[in-house]
Amino acid sequence: MKLDALIVAAHPDDAEICVGGAILKLVDAGLRVGIVDVTRGEMGTRGTREERDAETAAANQLMRLSVRRNLEQPDGRVQVSVEAREKLARMLREHRPELVLAQHTDDLHPDHAATGRLAREAWYLSGLTRLAQLDGGPPAARPRRLYHFMGHVPFEPTLVIDIGDVWERKVALVRCYASQLAPSGEGDRGQHFLFGADILSRMETRARFFGERIGARVGEPLLSSGPLPVDDLRKLF
Ligand SMILES: [Zn+2]
Image (cartoon, rainbow, N blue to C red; front, side):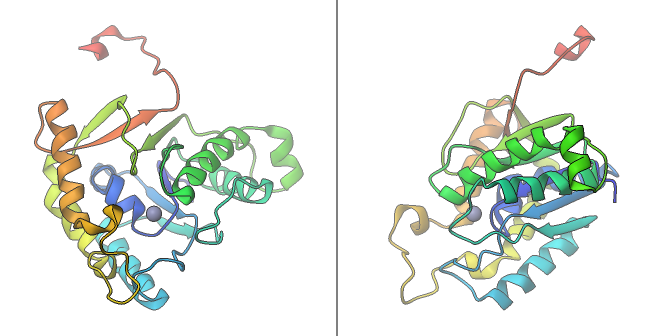
């Protein structure tokens, strides 16, 4: 299926937490949006696989995605292997999105950083004619734009999406992942700084900070993988 936008994230719920507002706005605009989760999140401290699958299904309903696929890489061990990047490049050729949003290549979680690099390399490879021929699948097609979204490590964004009109729906979307929102008891590193704070309040703090940067209530920051071309200078206004 031809998509307009594809989001690439390491674990189910990463896409919703980081760019759930962008996804809702894209779908509201009548565009076809898909997500590729690189793993099934089976190594996560919180929630069983069954719980997490049910939560993802509930989130999918709210997002009205055209497709959600999984790259079936091992959670906690994501690598930029030839196999993984060619598998993702094939998905890009199959869905031919114009826009790809992927995790940033710098992140404390190695799976997030590896997913960012994997997406960047697959994005490039998806446009190589000979590789597509060798693969025997759909013809070469490289998405026009690749942007990275923010995980643990902040960056100075190229742009910030005003998500004020969909903020409450984004919160509802992330609430679908109830097993991820509270410590699960024994063995949960609830005191670690990455886990101690409520995910929803951290998400709101970031959204308000970046929203303030553009004079909006809440925003989602993105980093372009390269300079953005402008021919019509009115677009600078
Ligand atoms: Zn994650």
